[in-house]
Picture 1 (cartoon, rainbow, N blue to C red):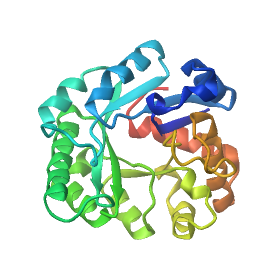
Picture 2 (cartoon, helix red, strand yellow):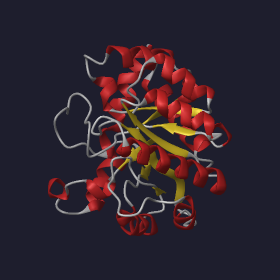
Picture 3 (spheres, rainbow, N blue to C red):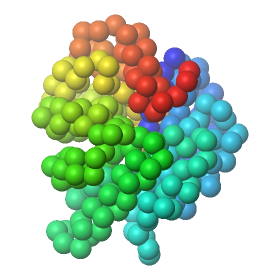
Length: 260
């Protein structure tokens, strides 16, 4: 069984699936995917995620605010803790820092403040963090360390940094999650990370509907395609596909403290 450890089921364009989310899930099941973590990026989406989880016992959810989400009032740890009481919610995030679309100054300060609130919520609820970082790796690692995030750990989602950052994250009790990017020919630095990260720290994801792996690059991504991420890692490491499938699934349940 495979796990898609990070997807956005509520963002998938269902016109490709006869306008029915069940077809997305059935296609994933036919490709060996048995569990999904559908990740929250803004609080307005959370009721929709709760509904998905209520209707499917193999869908887990998270609660969090993506660093680029604009909010009238910044999210607080108390808000996140209240929403995280849903038993289907197994993580806080996605959260982190993304400087790609922001200029230095106030927007970055706000991101850093909200990031700290998410970490506080994770520590309070004992639920792991889902971390997004883009062009902000050093600040991300620094804040995780300052806030004691190693006490709860979590996952560096859609990892696209180098081996040094991967090691720093693992030292803080985080798993490294690979998306379809690892299958791209030009992602040479990430290939090195995929070869050298210990097997017991690897997770796989689609981040669907984004970042479809080769040979579907440029098309809409969906959870059935997570097997191509596993295959890409297996090829890079010279491992058997089943080994990567099994260990990444075991790592997911370990990271998020779930029983199979």
